[in-house]
Image (cartoon, rainbow, N blue to C red; front, side):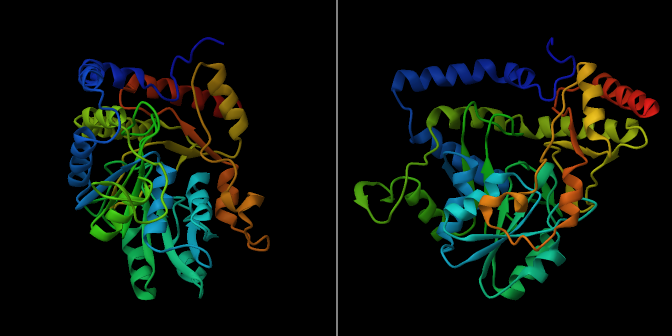
Length: 370
């Protein structure tokens, strides 16, 4: 089949805007042979911390490592449980397991498909040590309710903000609302590198320093031969930090473009295609535009036949995956039902209203033929 006339994601237009700036700065790094760490990484970390409204940012190799290192830095490990929504990417739960803890999956809100604070409160037990709030699809979870629950029980609150770069909850940037926030900079993210990359943000200097040390083979900062704890190699390299630093200048404008696309979908989506709802207290950055339909496979086939890309995020709730050893007697009906209905439509900053009209016209035609 030929390339999609309306692709699911178009990175080329974004990259064309930043091509010359990135190549010029890469050439400088090449001339200096400065590829790992150094002033470029320090500069981006400072800017990203400021952007998120926190005191510290630590660049790491990817978003999954960011989550695991946060949990380890907070002292969470064997014998602990971490409450997490079933409707999330597998990496959220993977990080819990790799930290030595056990994921305790809970159901999600039926309107937003984000973690349900009441379900979290009901799931807390003697082994519970933390809650991970996943800001899925670019929409912040209810951090007000989750914060109250965690404070009342003395639990750590970690933000998985891998899909929510720049989003706000009640005017405050995600990443700054819990004990720490974890970001992925995978290329397809709102702020994406040209390879794998990630970061942790926090106001806690001790947490930031532990993460920085663990991500660099357990070194004490500035002392290459002083290994003070068991660590690993999870460093953000200078080449990716340069890409992120250049793109950060464009992030708010690109997010505004995503909001324009989301507004167009809100006007044009036909009946029978229900968008996942947002919360009036949140400012979403629309990493994904997710809708629900009871005949997803047929709808997706119709889009494909008309040269329109789509995705499914995510077709299998995490609690169903046997390797997480979740309680088989604990049904999570909202997440389970949604997994069979959710469909991600094309969404990217340079998408035009004409593109949205074509997607929605195809959906309308398919619905009328059903």
